[in-house]
Each structure stands twice: as structure tokens, then as C-alpha cells.
Image (tube, rainbow, N blue to C red; front, side, top):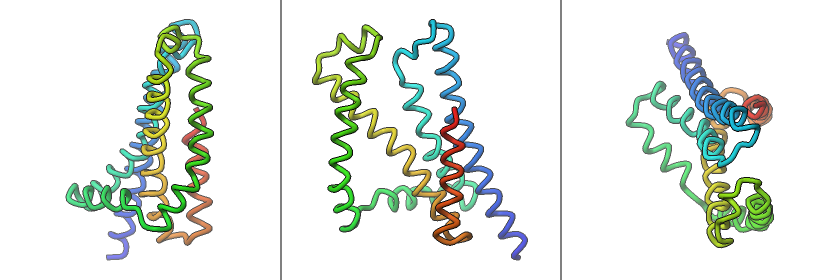
Length: 174
């Protein structure tokens, strides 16, 4: 029985890694290929934002492989739950969000793509904030919502943090 359980854990981890890296690196490769054919400018970065959903999709794939699709909705519900400590942390992080938001505004306005400059500032703000939130949601749901807890049960807090950090670093290589 232990051999079967160990095989199941490895299978879910492999599913997570394949979907996470395959989806993200596939999206980002298409982005890079498009920038090369268009003279080196990325233009709109919707492929970049799309690629950040790789960890979320990897978590969903691992859950599907490990226990079936009936477990996906409870997982999504769990990663979306906010307790009091999380609310305080979110309020504290709002300062960082505002700083990143200001940086996104500057980046959008400085984008050499004429389409970005033609947007009124209010729409540029909305698009920058929506893009940042989408990227954070796609990444964190996978890293902290699936990979972290999966590794924590096997490696403990320090081992899980180190392993997640190593995978996160490798994922960001492209």
C-alpha cells in the first residue's frame, strides 16, 4: 500500500511540474518568438500574463490526477478563503501593491507600443492593475495553494520552502 501511495504522490508532482512548466514556458516561448518576428518588441504582453497561470493550472492538474475532479472545487475554495491574519497581511501588503501599481503605470506610459500610449490614463491604470492581479493570482494559487502544502507534508517547513524556492527560480528562468 505504501508503494502505491508513494507512486500516487510522485504522479501528482510530475503532473504539476509538466503542466506548470509546459503551459508557462509554452506561452512565454510564443511571446519571445513573436517579439523576434516583430523586430524585438513584445508589444502587448497578454501571452506573458497568460503564462503566469501555469502554476494554477498545474495545481488543478495535480489534484485531478491525485484524486479526481471532484476535489478541484474544494481546493479552489480553500485557496480563496481569507482569515483574519490574511486580511491583516493583505492590508499591510497594500502599500507594496500601490508601489507596484505606480511602477506599472510608469511602464505602460513608457511602453514604445503606440497602442499603450493611446489609452487614457484611467484605462491604463485599470489594465495595469488587472494584469498585476491576474499574474499574482495565477502564480500564488499554484505555489502556495498546491506545491507548498504538498511539499510541506513530506519535507517540513524548511525543506518545503527551499524546494518551492528552487522550483520557483527554475520556473522564472525564461
